[in-house]
Length: 339
Ligand SMILES: [Zn+2]
Image 1 (cartoon, rainbow, N blue to C red):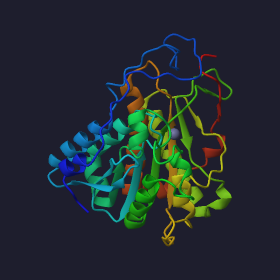
Image 2: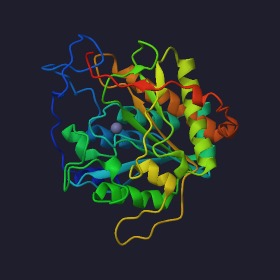
Image 3: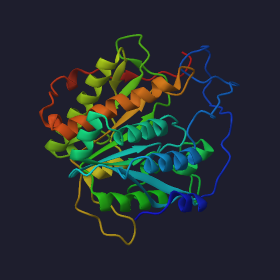
């Protein structure tokens, strides 16, 4: 389904993004990792829904036909749930950003990655030839406009806990897209809610690798191996980028998260039939929360490992990735902001 972006945007309910954000947790380190009480944080430089509409339109129009933009459906407030497709390869790579509306910079990272994938760069050509990349720059459009984690209407719920109940139209729409494109790989981009340190150090944790949103016993052995390979490729890319204090995401087993159900299968919205398709691998990133450092660095912490995983999936090196170092990776220690 292809529709013009102008038509898509016409149907959208545009809302005004707030210019300030207040967080409940107090923080007291000026210039530190956490937003402080009474601190004005400008969201004017953060991509909002209108920026996504305009950005996707611009990328599509200048891509010489390499990028096509479509809508998976409409949000609770009536915004189009836009996604872009680039590449002609047999394996589909699902890249989703900002399922939590107040996790800001993954949208810009997704748009930057899409723009690069439409370019003449050698890695972009390699990826286009071997993969079909589906990019969702703003999964939770309503939550993003309201600058909250959850959806706004009809229910205010966490969209990343809704792939069992499918209470939200966003979940049903993206599940339909999932059944149509049947991805081989999935990557989900998040920001941390706290300011953890890397266990055994005093280093502020900047990046967490989420190789498992569910217990590995719920995956096939091949999926668990692929997830760890995607994780190690990501971290090796960050090592080359420069000093990044990374850690493993805490142990969780959340079966109703989007990528969890892409791994497990077995669910469908009411009235739909579950599809047998499951992904080969699906992981997530958690990048340091929004603070006072440059937005560009936060974007890089998404972009660099994502590109590395795309290249590894495209050139086949993912299958041969050494995962022996995974078990030695440190965990993060959660710490409230300002401590
Ligand atoms: Zn999140």
